[in-house]
Amino acid sequence: MKNLLFTFRGVFLLGIAALSFLFSCNHEKDDWEVYAGIPKDLRYTMVDNYLCGDYYESSEPSVFVGKAGATFEIIGGSATNGGSFNQEAFMIMPNSGQIILKNYNPLSPGDYAVDVRVTNAEGSSDFIGAFRFTAMPQAPSGISYYPYNYSAYLSESDFFITETPQLKGGGPYTFKLTDNYNNLFSIDEATGEISFDESEASVSDTGYKSYELEVHVTNPIGEAQQPYACKIELVGDQALKKIYTLESALANASDLGMRNALSYTVLGKYTKVYDMPDDVDDSDNSVEPEKYVTTLKDPDSAPNYQQGWWYNAWHGYPESYDMDVTHGQSQVEMRECYPIGIRTLNRDVELVSYLVTDEIDLTEYNEKAQLIINGYYIWRSSTSNQFFGVFIIPADQYDADNPEESKWEEIIEDVTVPHFYYHDIQKGTPVKESEIYANQFVTDLDNKYLSTKFRVAIRAEKLDKDKGSMNRSVFVNECTVRAK
Image (tube, rainbow, N blue to C red; front, side):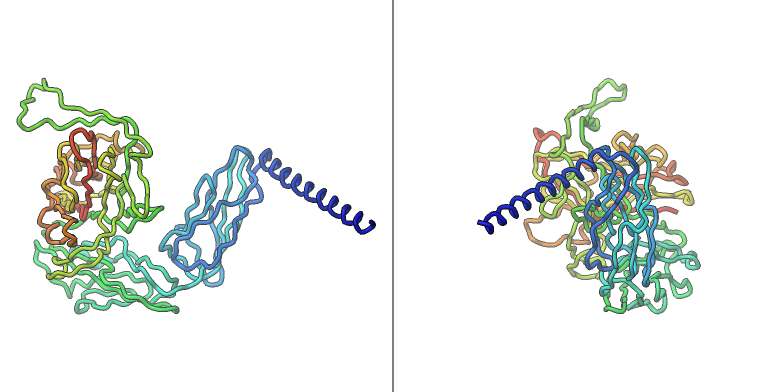
């Protein structure tokens, strides 16, 4: 009986303890919800096995801020044990506090601490070293230069130099060129920056010579070799220099892969005003152009990522090319700079999406400018309700928040037909480089854009399924501005 009573007392006391614990947890939660004061007690979970250059996204931190919430920002940091702190390697989600280490970030092996400021309605608190981790070295991989395309007059050799390459692994690195083209190019063994020697170069006054360079790199863990790591074009003194070339990386679930452009998909009410047909005389403005009004809704017409693919947004697209122009013979391989493509989930989805270049600076070029665009498309379908127009706008007139409200000047209503190469995917053959260049769109820019800054856009419009199928998918291989 005594033992039974003891057991009952034990269970009773254990139950009381459990209830007390639950009450304590709820009480803490209540404290968190009703907390009033500046932010306190910011904490991140531990980072396990981080390798230099890899992408990493933290979980949301815990912090006392009250019901109204707070905003987060990185204000600095430090590094020890061989590390070198670089704030550009990090991003922070302003509303959740999640910290991201960017893909191909330049952090070297070492220990890192990130300082975070949290702000709520009551004020701000700085948490020094709130997010900590150790970056471990790995063998080099993924060598790439951004920009990938370089263009230089021979007379610019004294100050021409590429950017340092992006790669994973962690230094110290040793870089080498596998072919320097008879000493025409040299590479900084420590940084990977490439330059050229004018005395070893020759090109006609109106000509171009392009070189795709292969780079070899080692670090204490291993080595890697990257063919076509970057492309350098040497330009004759009377030729048009390449000022801007659209570039992209491979898209993933969190990144469209844009390097020097952006994708903007329009949602809400949208009015399409069709160009007046060539056979209609509207010299006195008496004829009303055809219009189509629709509402582009989320989620149908919004960017979305499904099963490894982006829809309704321009993005870096993985495509193998038959590089018959580059190599002078048929050779299938993945391009280092990916084409930028757009498509919808099915042929009934309406879409309006802008591919907008970064600002293009021609302030030092006043003689001539040229726009070159090429690419390919798949699925032959209606041309009466699908348009991939090309537009231009002075930089100071561009509305970054609402690109569709900007006063764009139309260059061509649809660049794809007949200027883009139609690729029949049902044949199962790769995209041919020679076919792309045989069907490109080239136009001189109006002189008013010389000595100025501007942007170029390609606008995808797929509207009104009653006019026909809307399943054309378009891929831009090149969008280049040359000038002199």
